[in-house]
Length: 405
Image 1 (cartoon, rainbow, N blue to C red):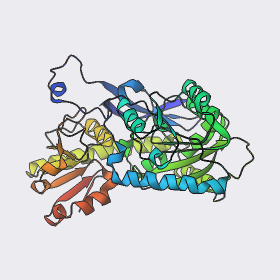
Image 2: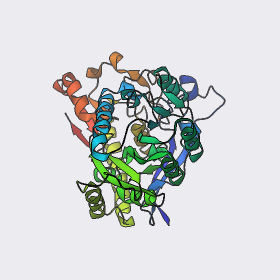
Image 3: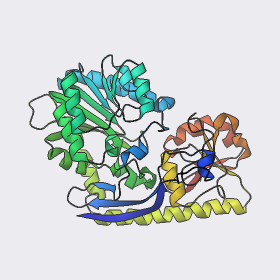
Image 4: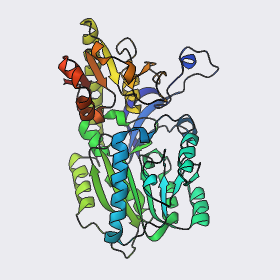
């Protein structure tokens, strides 16, 4: 039984930044909004959106997040690829055939000579094709998996980062993985951790793209009913505000793949200790989210009364959730500073706060910077030392609404 525990109100497509004409109603189409409500499945322990958004509305040629523009993420994927190659000897699998689901503009797959990509966004397909990788411009399904196997054979390594949580039909997704995976192959995927979100109160991990926020508890059950088994979990607390890297093999396959470190047991122990298998835990979280909204709006209104200038740092999908849930617009935040070329000169979804080029914004003119990219707060603080020395303050809502410098 699925039980609703959180309502984040009317929300737009989180990564659909708008042109001036769209903001001012000079086009025939209105901005899309949907009810962002969250449910807990008592049978599987899966946390999901109550209402899914059509994938075509989110993932298309206008998608604005280029992973290769993030230096920390490029380095992360380089290290991850190196790890995958090192584990060949430990786990006895090969990397002759590599498949990436949701390859974006190629920062992971570019570390392999031969690989196949799946990517529904046309603009990124062009990037990986230019790098020399066969790329299927489609969503990951059992039908697509069959086509890939027919053309390239079974895959030794299937990898996906921040993509599996986007897929609404998880049974079809994992069946497609099972059908594509070689007998002793390995499926590895990274996605935001439900435990870290609950611990930190980072409700902004919830938006249209994140159809689910995964616990290991839920994944173990859903993978098992699709004849797949988790054999290792890596805690990636530094990635996207807290993620898990999940290692999966075929069920009951005789191989070197086993949980030598007890990582699966430990991950589940922590989740049960926190109460991720109990609905009451999610009601407590919802109350925490409501308080966060109240505290953030009060703080921003206080700045306004004091005549302080406030900007936001990072045009992120996460900040879309915050601004729309808290009804924050240009009355409280002047602009958003960002370095992503495709977002500069546009307007944030729903809130319509203008996005300006970081190189053209003198942040010393501002008293407070709200961290839309709070998961990179240490990197940002180190980069903006001049702002701190001038007496500027950063504002974040994670783990609670607070200033720091």
